[in-house]
Length: 401
Image (cartoon, rainbow, N blue to C red; front, side, top):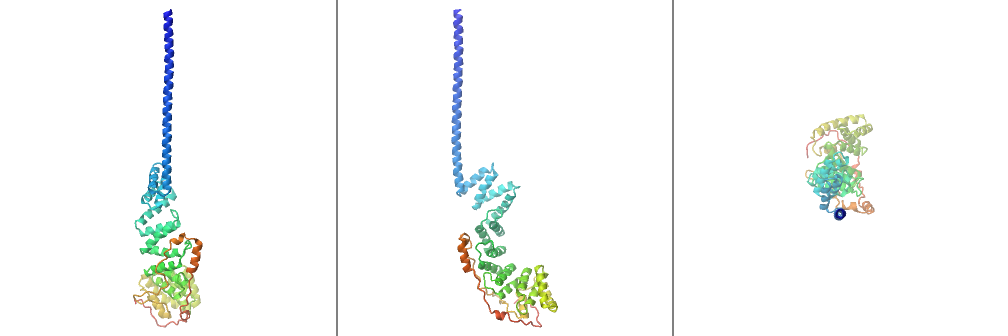
């Protein structure tokens, strides 16, 4: 019995020791696992802090204008977040980075349903063509920058693009520069620049440039008021078939001198014939002033001009010369190889066209008040307004001089 009891006691003690050992082993294993998890968590947190710090540094560099970092952030975000990718691509693109521009285009094409991005897509596709040398794209991108279409407003950058196109003799850009020089949206208007650009267009035989140059002379914008030169350029544009110029030529002659209404009626009759609606009412008003008999006679003079102008067979100065002979007008006509005396027009646009946009508004106002006052010259007005006596037998000469 004692032997069996001892054996049972030893066995029980062994079982207890084994149980204690297993518990101890289990606790040790759990402690080691907890320590491993804690170390891994600490490492993960340290790694995350390093990544956060690295991202903060990248964000700081990108926000400070470091383009490679912008492109890196954009490329990383492009995998999961198009909006963030677009943000960084656009910032790079706005700094004239070509990769940024292509990134913007790529993102916009993937998000076709966004109307705002459609406008941005159009702008950046146009801008890319502009920096590659497309003159029409320079004009379109420049307008978009000036008026904020598909991009942020950047007047200086937009004007630079359009100015480049104008310097390469792109007519639409030249006319735009003339219009912008006196636009209400331009905080640094320059009437003299307006006349410069219109004169450049007129010398290139552009009828819109001729018309607008004539209107500047008529109103004294950038030059002294000169009715003769105004009518010369308006009628030059009219000879080219510009119905709007015909209307303004008619308006310029209305009630001007004894025979001004007769000349006015001719141009208004032609303008109405070529489809400029406002000319019809003014033509009828002038007609009531000169009488039915005069209207019939003037229409018989104007109808041959309709055919010549419509066919494009009018030689430069031919109608002006004919009207000068018929009504003894002193409208200046340059001889062959000469140009109309326009010495008052500046030889080049203002060099501070872009710098002035950043100047103080008050300083600009003071400068413009001193520099843009137009002097109204008489130019022998008494002689010009004398009674014109029409000659009875004068034919219209369409041959070039």
